[in-house]
Image 1: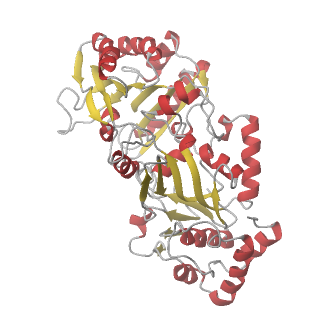
Image 2: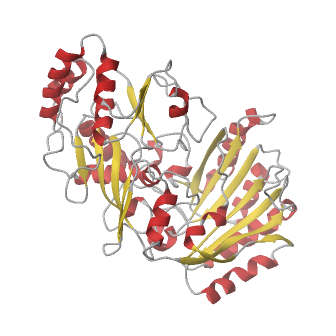
Image 3: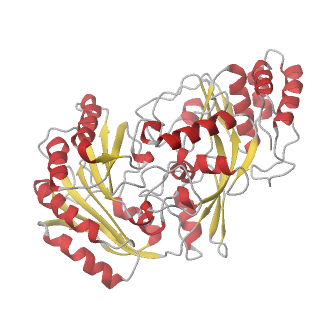
Length: 495
């Protein structure tokens, strides 16, 4: 498939703001072929739209999109634009609630014509600004999960959360490579790399993405896999930002149904003893085991056990998908590091994987970020505790060290743009930007990252904070991504 020439793109941007004059299939997941829109189709549609639109481009956008098209003055606008992250109040110039790929394409062409950016949001976990002068495409209506148990794949819409994939796959004795929280959008998580309980055993979530249907920044509908649009396939998986808006993906599933999993909690006063013990113990684990250790400042809540409610604690998270007796032997030393407050490690169906990290499920105004670590010597733990541990004055409510390695360090079968394969650990922090300590959250996060600078290296993009973070990539990756962006999004309309 060709992409828009420079002259064609200029004509597209100069024309009236809509480009969906095509005969469109009713499904957002139409098979590639005749249903795909080429640059020639787009230019032809623009010409037709220009004659029809007059002075009402938003009106034409509304007539071309099956889902809602909302301006700031419209009822439902704020609700449609809202996301999980509430530190920012989204204020896009228009919100397009996509119900099919053609709705997404309409939004892209409208943005090209009016000189706006396109941003995409499924759950809004990654919202980092107020989205002014953007066309916000919400993909929550692009649902649907279809599992092929023979091929061990799932076909998922752009608005699908991991919970839907987890439950659908479990019916066939399979599981996806989700993260620590099943309420996160599956597509956005995977495009950023994606590390979770199964990652040391099976690799990054991005490695498991077989194909993607995407509306690229030149207003074309494309299918990208290892054979078709291979460069786009490489760039999207781990590139996360720019290039286009994904509408559907096919991902690999793995044969996992159960695990030994949970967390062992200790008092904050034992943080030094626990973190030092963890750094010695974690690297001895086999790849079917996952672990992290976190310093958590928990709110008072009747939903928390009394030993945890309103307390600062240390949580050692553990999961293991192999033999239960082997798992019990591996986790047993953890219980000897200090007096245990709560021990929730038990046999669980993998569908209950949220129980390991118990991530918050309610929206909150936060700032977060982190770094990878090449190694974790005693000096690194001491530096981290001094900057962000109990008694340090840090405003962070969560500081997590996560073991990486295993399959996360290996080259994927099909190359992708993932960063962080060289990290032995990841460090991540979270602060609340509201309340008395809100102003100190970001400085505390910066202090945490700086404290381990001697041992830092690129880590998971989803945990790095700060948007694109091309600074974490190798020069070769940056050059290759830039070439892909010039080809597929020459006007830089996406992101």
